Each structure stands twice: as C-alpha cells, then as structure tokens.
Amino acid sequence: MEEVLEQPCPFCKEPIKPDALKCRWCGEYLKKDLRLRARFKNRARPDPSLPEPSTILILGILGLLMCGVFGAFALTQGNTYLNRCAALRIRPSGIAVTGRVLGMVSCVIMVIQTIWVALFLTGHAFSVRF
Image (spheres, rainbow, N blue to C red):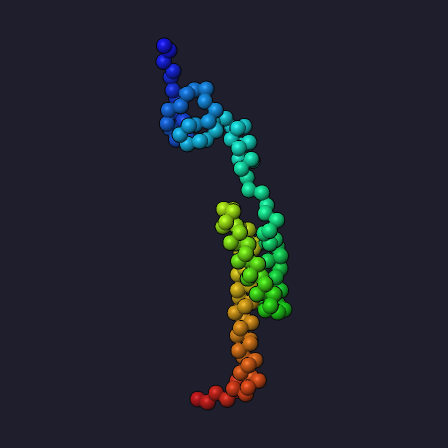
C-alpha cells in the first residue's frame, strides 16, 4: 500500500492531501478561483427591507436645519437600519450612522426648544430671580 504524503494547509497548517480542493480542518478553499467563487456566492445581498442610508442622512440634515420631526424620523430609521444590519451580520453604512447621529442631535434640540416654548408661553421663562 502506497503512503500518501500530506502537506500543510496554507491557512491553518493542518496536514491535508496534496490534491485537496478544500481543507477539511478550516474549510478554506485551496485554489484561488474556488475561494473567489465561494465568497461571491456567500456575499450578502442588499435587503429590500433596509432603509436607504442616504435617506437617513437627508432626514438627519433636515432635522437639524428645518424641523426636529425629520430628526426623529432619521433616528428611528437609523435604529431600524442598524438593527437589521446586526441581524444580517453586515457592516452598516457610515452615511446611515451619521444620519442617525444627526437625528439624535436634532431630537435633543427639539426637546430643548419645546421646553423653552412651554416656559415662555406660561410666563416662567423670564421670571427667574437671583
């Protein structure tokens, strides 16, 4: 019986047969074209239920410049986007994260404005005595 010489896997260094296409230990393909094909096949496809990152950014900017309600929408859409990305195990877009942060800032400004308007309308805004 012929003894089959084994060579180390280039990825995990475990012994494999010289004519192997895939390492039985780490699961990596040993030929470049097979590796590329496997990565393309396993690549995450865009999920149609994800909000568009550019929409989240635009809502965040509009929330800062015009009305805080847009910021609230940017915040909720950004949270939805980040939760879906985490569930799909894909990296979130920086544009969406930026829009979400702008939405947070816009919501904080909107709350401060609402408190100030409430104090102003009730007459307490200028009645602070030292």
